[in-house]
Amino acid sequence: GKVNVQFLNDGYTTILQHEPSSSTTKIQIQKFWGWDVEVSNEDDLPYLLCSADITLPEEDTYAPGETVRFYFQTLVENTSGGGGEIVVKDGTLSTADGKGEISCKDGTITVKRDVEPPGGFWGIFNGGGILAQFRYVGEFTCRPIL
Image 1: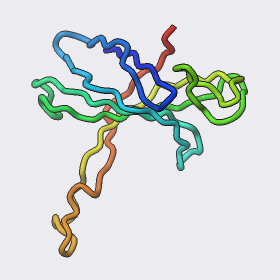
Image 2: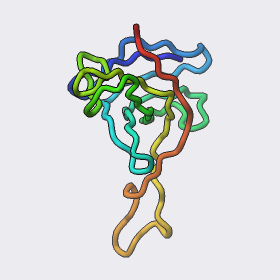
Image 3: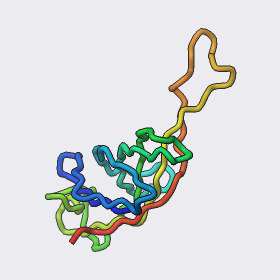
C-alpha cells in the first residue's frame, strides 16, 4: 500500500493519504509519530527515523488483530551540496542554510520485541521489558509528494 506523510517543522507528522495495498491484506494505520534525523554510530551517515502504530488484520501470523509500532529508517542524502544539518522547513527536508536539496533513499522497517533475560530474573529484579531488539520486517520506498 501507500501512505503519504508530511513531516512538520516541529518534529511531528501528518498522514495526508493512506491507500491499502489490497482488500485481502488490510492494515489500518492508527498514527504516525514524530520524526528525527540521527547520525548512525555505525557509518556516520544521517538517517530519517519515524514510527507508526499499525493495526494488523486478524489473518496476520505475526500479531493477529494487534496494533504494533513499526519503525521506519531511511538514509538521507544531501544531493546539491548545501551546508549545515538536515532540517525540515515548511514540510520539506533541507539543509540548515537552505541551499541544499535533500533526498531520502528507500528504507527498512523494523519492530521492537522484548528479549527475555536468561532465567527470567536477575537476582531480585525482573528484567522483563528492559532488554529489546529491533527485528527487520520489510522495506519501503520514499518518493517526494509533488
